[in-house]
Image 1 (tube, rainbow, N blue to C red):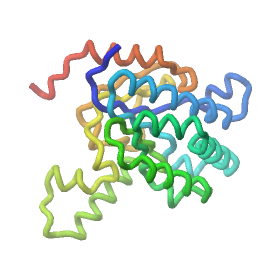
Image 2: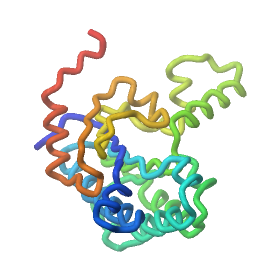
Image 3: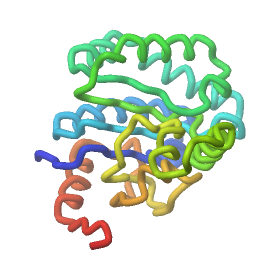
Length: 232
């Protein structure tokens, strides 16, 4: 199915609950979820979507969960980013990779930080497809940081453009569709609050590790049936 939307964002909830249902340790859910993300992002790009954003971990996830779970989450992401298959996928399909959030400050794995920086450098010249990973991200913190920057520049007028330009996510276009898995239909931590002001939302009972290409096509079909009026 060919999609007309430009930017889709995922809140991939349910990794740990999926692992628990299968009698596994929590990080096995993250492992399955990481593999699923690359499958879903590929499906989204094939469907004509230019921007795919995934919330991989919040700031609280990287500070409040157990040290062993954080360690395994970081190792899973590092392994995926280091794999020849993933690198080839980025380069062959001209995918720009960006990690946004406080990951440099919060991630305890220096090797992961180095790998992230390398993938970003290697793909920074691509423009056709954009893969953004929100890592150590919190929408409320993002907005507070933007406000602090504006306060330091009193000569800058406070308007829509100046606020947007000071966001961590300022390079991204508005989000057309937010998909949240896991069966709990709610917003979290001011998720991309500026970019989702006019977004459509799609909630599913599926846990993220069970959200496959077929489920994505259901979400895109649902979006295509909706009428977006933008206040008109």
